[in-house]
Structure formats: C-alpha cells, structure tokens
Length: 421
Image 1 (cartoon, helix red, strand yellow):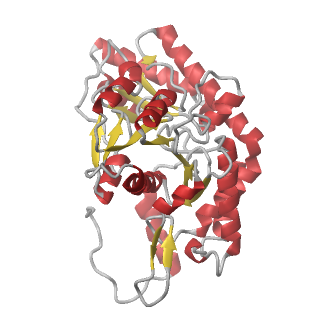
Image 2: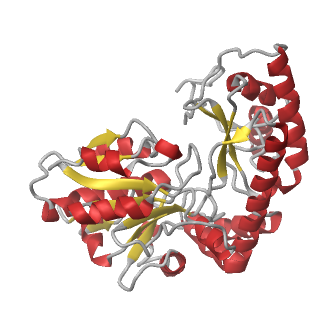
C-alpha cells in the first residue's frame, strides 16, 4: 500500500546512523504510544517490570531462528517445549496432548483449519468439499484460512444472547462439514460461546472442534481461579480437539507469538508439512512459515516464568475490577451500558438512546483510542491492568460526550467500524 510522502527511490549511498534515527523520530512523531493509558484498543500491558523482562528476553534471542533450533539453538527448543507444557497444564489438557508456538493468532487458526482438513481426509472421507461452521462472531481469520487450504465457510447470521447459536450450527451441518468453531471469547462482545454445547455437537457428528481462545486463553483460566462464574471452555470439555491462545495478548510476551494446542499429540501428523523433494534434505515444520524469531519464543517463556500463576491472577483481578467499575458507572447514569455479561477483557458499550458513532467520535477528540462495533453500534474497549487508574477520567469523558450527543450539540460525521492491517 503506497503512503503519501513515500520515498520510492532506493538510495545509492547509505545514511549515517544519527541522521537515520533522527529521520525515524520524525516519521514516528504521529504514532501513539502502545502503552498510553488512554489506549483501549489491542494493547497488552502487564506492568513496566513485565515489559522490561519481555524486552530483555526478546533482545537476548532476537537474532536466533527457531527453524534451526535443533542444530543451532537448543535453548529455543527448550523454551518452546516448556511454554507448551505450561499452557497445556493451564488449559487442563490430558496426557498425550501437544502443541507449538506460531507467529500469531491468525497462523494458529490457519494451522488448526489445515489440521482439521487433513484429519477429515482420514476420518470423514465423504466430505469431498470440506466446510467449517462458524458462529456469527468468529474471527475473519477462519475465512482467510479456509481460502488458503481450499475449504468453505458457513457463517451463522445471528448470535442470540450475543453468543454462538448451537441449534443453528447443528441445522447447518452437512455431509461436507468437518469442523465446528467456538470462541472463548470472540472479539466483538467478549462473551464466551457455549463451548460445551458446540463440542457435544462435534462429538455426536464426528467433527473436529476448535476453540479460538486467542484473546482469552491466558485470561479465562485465572478468572476461574478468582471464583468468577465461567463454564468450562478448555480441554476439560469432551470434544474440544484444539485450542488457539495468543501469548502476545494476555500472555504478555513480545509480538509474534501464539499457541496451537492439540488434545491428541498424534494429530500433529495432520498439522505438519514435510518434503524431501529438493536437494537439501527433509524440510519439516508444524507452522505455515519457516523462520520464526527466537525473541518471541524466549520472551514467552521468560514472562510466563516471571509472573507465574500468581502474577497472572493478580493482573486478571485488576481487569475484573476495572470492568466492574466501568459497568457500575455507566449503570448509574443509565444512557450507556455494557453489552451482556462479558467474561473477557474485551467489552462492548452500547446505547438504546444515543448515536454510538457520535459518541465514539467524541471520545476520539478527547484522546481516547477505542474500537468500534457495527452490530449493534457500539464502542469496543479492551481492558488491561494499565487501565486501573483511568476509570474516573473515562467515565467523565463518556458522560460528557453523551450529554453532547443527547442535546444535539454533537452528531456523527459518519465514520464506520474498520479493522485494517
């Protein structure tokens, strides 16, 4: 994508380092700080101490490539194995489970879809045009993955009670269905899908069932520890075959790290790509990509070991308290409300009386960075421990903007929800 002011000429001579970094400072002058307390978008801050540990571990292995782990960087092999083992323990996996680190949630989803497709070639050979059935709120990465591996997506049209609709999903099952998906939670509402019911469908019809825990995989287990009401969503649920969970979200690792976990390690055969057709010998990976930055893997291990269960639990407790304070403040006013009862840290603020596009634009002008929701119109806030101290300021600005919208002093300019990379 071309950008206004882009330099299209590869310079003949190099640039001095001091000049180069001065130019970078100028180019980045308009960037937002990722850890700004007013950033309520996808920013996963767990404390300056955690950030420091993450940076130090990342930098230590930033030049290492995990594809050569076995021959050159055995430390990365150990880090990855221990991260996977800790995550399997956290998500209540049975003996024989397995997994690996990918470069992000989209790749975890891609590999889950590919694994389900190749598993179905053995277990559902009659599915000649394999299909995935998705709830309305499932991540678009499933469509992306289906395009890559030659599958068809059947996406539900509604989310009764803001959750997946198992009855509609069952009605959509055909001889070509190979995979069902539930989210824990989905990005739009933060309300965990009925994983038990979807997994039961998968079992009764002989289908692969994937839980997209990319945003909640490192948050929901600690909600349970805190006694918050939450139905099982992980490998305790019979019929759950795979789970994705992002390390670089609420696992607080450096960017470029997610997990794909399998109930049965034997199913790695359906995930792995191997070829010995070229002159350099066998090439074999569990990921779509080949090279993987060692820094992302090392930082995942370091942060998990640094925080331990207690550290994660403390940060989830902070998120719960912030969510509750926001919801109570809105309820006291009455014009805005948190949609449903979101278990996740991603919450949606809606209104039956106010134009939420206008509200969102008013918050933008006051320096708040929020996401948008189209159905229903609303604000998406992603709460982290960073936001414990901003509740009063956020509520004050929200209610002031609500006053402006209610009085007609502010109307929407027409901006829409956009999520573009």
